[in-house]
Amino acid sequence: MDCEGKATNPNTTDNIEFAEPSATNHQPLKLLRDTEARLRRATVATLVPILPPKLSKKVQATSSLAENSLNELAEIELDQISDFDLRPARIQVGLSFVGFGALMILVLLLDLNTLHSELSTIGQIRQYWYQYVWFVSLGVTGMFILGREAMRPMPRRPKLKKDKF
Image (cartoon, rainbow, N blue to C red; front, side, top):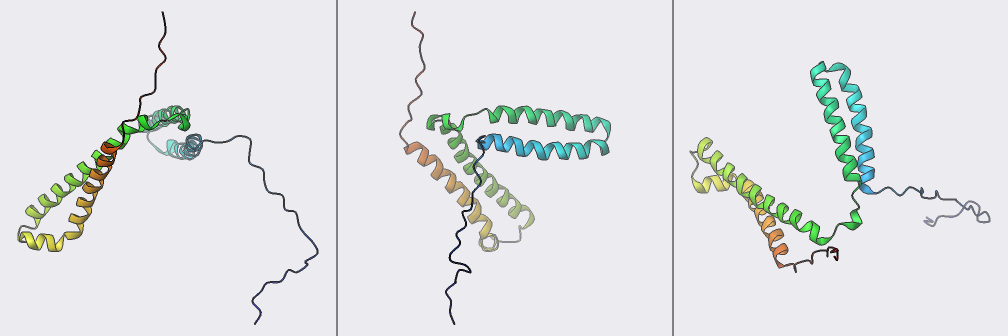
């Protein structure tokens, strides 16, 4: 059995022209704005005729508010965002992970103590170990994010131009 492929006509060579990239280089935030706007406008146009008048006005107002917000976001230059600008966001994500993990462990313990009070502590852990591990892992992940951020060298602030008098 011959497994090698053979060309049907080895003498002809086809020069395939590839499509040239468009001159308008879309940035990700502009692409998000355009895609979301296209989907939102179609959804709003479908919903407005079947909704009560009061609710349809609120949907249209919210849609225009979303349009303005996405236009502002699309103006952001992603290349201009520095490491210093992202530091608060990384800290907030770490704190969110820690807080959510702790809150969910508290909710799990409250649920187990009120709805499953017949179980002992060992029985609760034996039956709900997966949830314990999941929520503890979220908290540990948040602590790793915060620790990483704490060990980073402090980024330098961008220098502001001072006017000389």
